[in-house]
Amino acid sequence: MRARTLLPFIALLGAVTLSAQQPVARQPSAYEELQTFSAVLNHIRVNYMDSVTYTQLVRAAIDGVLHALDPHSRFESHADRDKAAKLERGELAVTGLVLEDADGAASVLAVISKSPADKAGIQPGDRLMLFNDTTVAGLGARALELRLAGDKGSKVRLRFERGPRLEPDTFSVTLQRAYVNVSSVSIERLVDPTTGYVRLEEFGEKAASEVHDALRRLRGQGATQFILDLRRNPGGVVRASVELASEFFPKNTVVFSTRGRKKDVDTTYVTKRDGEFTGAPLIVLVDGGSASAAEALAASLQDHDRALLLGRRTFGKALMQTVFFTPSGDVVWLTIGRVITPSGRFIQRRYRGLRSEEYRAFGGVAGAGEDTLETFHTDHGRPVRGGGGIAPDVELPRPAPVPIWWSAAADSGLDDALADSFALTLPATPAARTAWMNARTEWETRLVNPLLERVRNRFHVAAQPDSMLVARIGRNLALRVAEVRWGPDARDEFLVRNDPDIRAAADYFRRLPELLSGPK
Image (cartoon, rainbow, N blue to C red; front, side):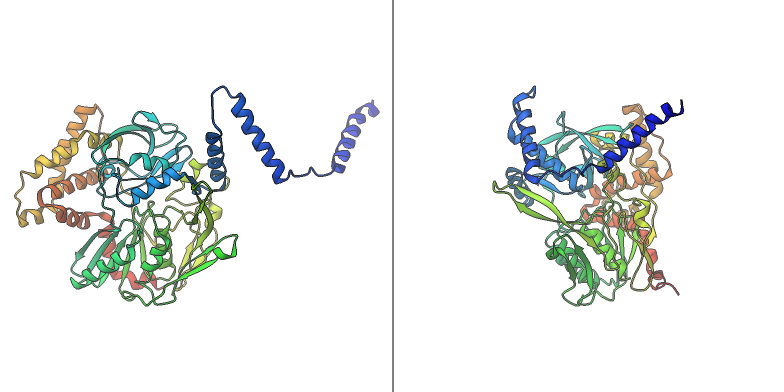
């Protein structure tokens, strides 16, 4: 009995021993792997139930390879590149959406200010599902951005998802393509007699010179301290961030470094001149839409204790990419390095081991716990952490989330119709304009309440916003009134006076020396 019981065990032990003595399986050579790949393609082309071409299969394979590397490497066909060049030259009208790929869906990374998409209430994080009643599944974000461009005045119908993937809210909007003047600096104004405000939309080729000129003009109006707004700034030309940093640092200050597998990628970027505004008190606004070059600049200003960062955690995208051309003229945007802040922090969020949806979900929030364990220090010894973007020095409340019914109201024109008709009842006088800038009670009673009543009647929804959402809707409607009644300058004045983040930033200047001094 005992012997029979031991036999299976002895047999198993023998199998294990023999297995341990087996040679390690040989790894296939690159040539053999390519043979396997070619065979699979041929089987699909010959035997698959639907007709497919080698072009379709190879393109899908390229997309799959690049997607397996990181979330931002991508392929762009020669035709798409030609259309992109027209788009960059301003020859095509746009909707104002900046998209990112997110697990098979195109997610809104940013919405250009004053664009059709901005007017329609589309928010960062919304997912594009249908384009003119056709699914966009399988189309990359860049390809969709090019499809969204077209002739001025032409319309496109888009359907979006908002919220959790399993239980999303959906809404549709019709956008009329328009030429959008995307100058890097969109607003420059005095917040108060000594505080200048500059809104930087993106890091275009002329971003540094535009900010320089704006700062000079504000200084000429009496500004001695400045707010630089990088919220919803998706980045752009990396060297523009280095040039802009030169405005605030002495010559030879390290802005950031890049590190890659090849030695020629390892570069330290430093300022080339003494900045004209090295001594001016500076506060920088950031949020979950601040990405890439915007994050690199913000991190450098933080690491050198040059500016106080206010707002919300940045997006967490800081990979260095470059263009490689194929023999056919197509383009591969390939990630070749990582951006490192002066204190040694990685800005890029972790993506290995994460599904694309999980990677996107971390945008603007803390990364994985292990990414933020290591502590770094600024020049003055203040502790900062890496991983998952750049955390501001002062966290500000997040804006009230925009409900679906607000987007539906914007798409139907309810909001503009109400604001425009009310605007015409106001006197077109400077005194009336000044009074409107702070008439919060009137915004709610004359604008928000009538809009809510119309939304409930039209869409049969409860529409019971809390106080924060009421305040946000009131500001949006009152902003439209200001622009319609008194023009674009009144719109910018209204934004600067009533934006909660800008108002909070203005109050922090008196505490800058204390907050940037480091541990006592």
